[in-house]
Length: 177
Image 1 (cartoon, rainbow, N blue to C red):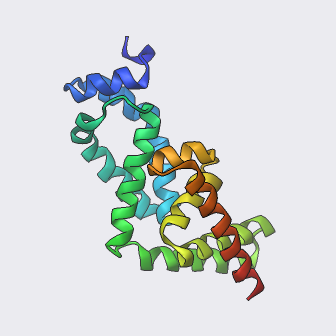
Image 2 (image 1 turned 90 degrees about the vertical axis):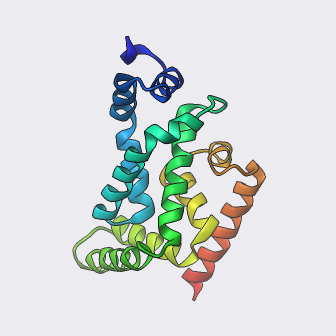
């Protein structure tokens, strides 16, 4: 019965202590949690730790899920906030910078042009940081619309559009430098 239930219904049941509903939510969405955690950390062990921390905290966090947004939007917000908190703490910042540097080094070797460009982009995003980095990951890496990213980041769609414009300017400046 739970497998056919929509995410919002499963989330409400899980918030009420239904372990089976929680298990189904995790089965459906763990890959998304991990993928987004990896995009924010850039390092597999850190992404695994972050995803695990999110999953451990999720039962308590589900109590705050009101169903006003889709569950997936709410879950993206949970992951973004957890990644933001971890990044602010500085735990991942140095490791991520090294990892992106290692990716760039690898890319200089035998990797494809696309891999070199991706490594450069992640390094540039790490240097740019902040709101622009978060917005870029959601829009560029997760392929979300400006409206979807705005809902997750709890800003106006025009703010996401402005951030993407600013990001393009900063990236162009880095390319031209």
